[in-house]
Length: 436
Image 1: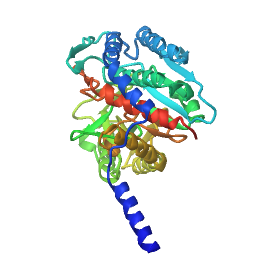
Image 2: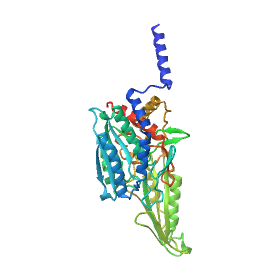
Image 3: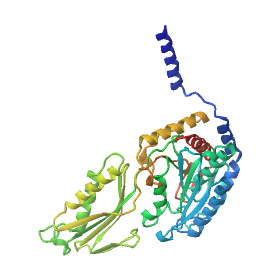
Image 4: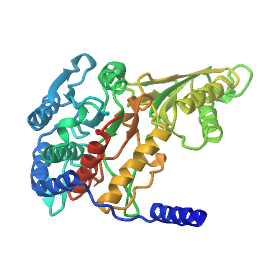
């Protein structure tokens, strides 16, 4: 009889676990959700003001003005806000805001960015609303994310949960075009990652087939430069024992072997710029190439630039070694060298800790009556600032708004996504802040 009772209890427990029953929010959580809804128009108005202020990465004054806008939102919530000047790295600077919580509370790191890809000379400068959508530069990436942070924190304050939360906010001023050396521009963020328990990235929400996705991984971004030299001379003598293959054919050999020998899961690689001739070179920024030659002259130099993206630092190291081996197997009378730019974006691997955080977010979704967010394929998400702390702390990405057409004129934000993203963030942060 006792065995039957235990079996019945076990069956009920299993049924409860397998049934996505709607669980009621606590009173403070319900207050947070109501506050986000009530302040929706306030949030949209804040987004409009920020979008209408140009903050292209190289518009230092504009980036600082957006920093001032965020300061005006965060200081009344109890945050100490500092501006970290980055003139030494050729960039505007970063906002860092901190607020201590109760003893034993998990320390949360919130990540967003002040800058956009649209510089002051861009013709795309104005916020235009059409119902629950709006078009504007940076409306999604990442001014919408900053608005979600403000909306969530205000909801926590209204519900009384913000006072106990230990939160540090980093809003970088050069996420779209990081300053050099990146070891300087990301030093404050890296240092913060070593002192916190959870990192939450407020770049845009990913949606696939109408379903909100959870992001627990981002791939790296690494740039490389290839330089090939050969013996130049009359084209009728190419491939003989004196002149060999020439620089252009050797460059082609290397790139072809990249294409055939490098592919593996979660890796992409690209050749973005290429040139060959008697003379060839890149400009100082490495974004333009020039070449001089004739059809009857064997090219003495060939150059190329590209990138590769990986899901882990181990994979990055393995890909570099394979590229080096291919480059070093020189064709007759040629030589080549490959170099990797310092300061790339590291990878954020899909760790067990990140998966556990997504599970906690999905409990929030369940309690809000929202669908669970499946993990997004890492191939569908680019590099970002959270990757600089990913080796030190568990994290989630994609807590900002949903938008389309980012980085191009016509960037369009789903304004209604502010509400569900701010509710998710406010409740998740409140729950995470209870204790370690």
